[in-house]
Length: 396
Image (cartoon, rainbow, N blue to C red; front, side):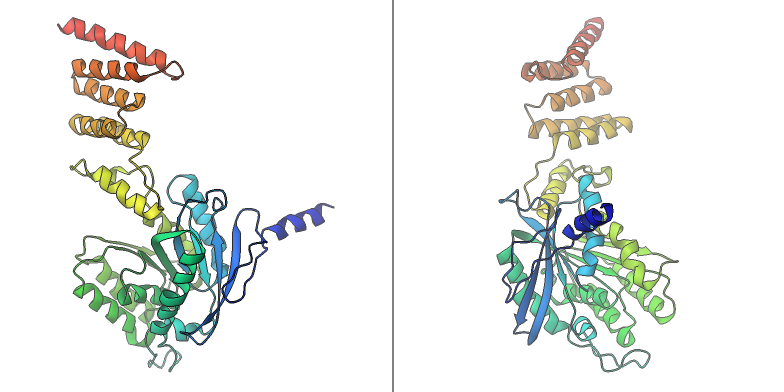
């Protein structure tokens, strides 16, 4: 009895709907995610191609919400790993929900390598179809996804080994098509390191590149490691202020496991968390608004600097004894949330630790003017006012 129940429950998680000629069947859904299979008759590739689309848990319940899209090369077998990583990040407000589009292979080497391999240690004569495959993605697949689902213009492409080479190639061929490129252990040894040379040339010629690149490598050695190191150094030493580049090395991880080892860092570094980190705060207080503008572009929704998140920045500055900067942050918070009791109290606290008791009392009184009886810390707020008033009286 227990076994049959378990089998039934598990089966609910793996149902897929299918479609012909890019028309999805919406009848079958998994318990937590909806997955739909599209079969596309590609005029560009002159063959049928299959993609599996996984929609976010909130997709049906939020009909006006739009989502960024992760295009994952090498098929739907990669969806569970992405889902697990993204769920953990989402539970900590460190990433938005996403649409995942997994592209199944037909002729992998043909599609993913930009050049034909002429180096005898590899399959000579293979490759060279990346430009055509990218045309399929740009001209047929992405328009289908954007038409069929509620997407917004933040797209990620990810792949491993040969697919990692393709992910880097897409940045060179069309830098604005994807906003993030993830390449797990890209097989840059291919064809005498042709992709390394092309990437170096592209980086050196670029004047601005507003993009994200993550690469990693495992235990690979020899020409693979030598050519990867050349790629890594070229990307690391770039002079492009808007290129966010991250690299990981996993010495004891095999080539086939680098996507597993790197998935968390790839997406953790990509998506901005709702709690702005101190490292993103500059001397210019407007860096707060700039951060949340970028976050809004990633997440697909307009996110005003959250009151609690900005207040926490102020508290962090207080702990660092940077009282003037803390007051500036608290003021910025009140500007966005002028009727917030907590924002006003935070500013009052900033003035208090700075030693400006009179201004601290003014802000606490302002907080009391907007508070209501349901506020859980009303008693503590009144006690703060009384304490500050006593201090101010002693000073006068």
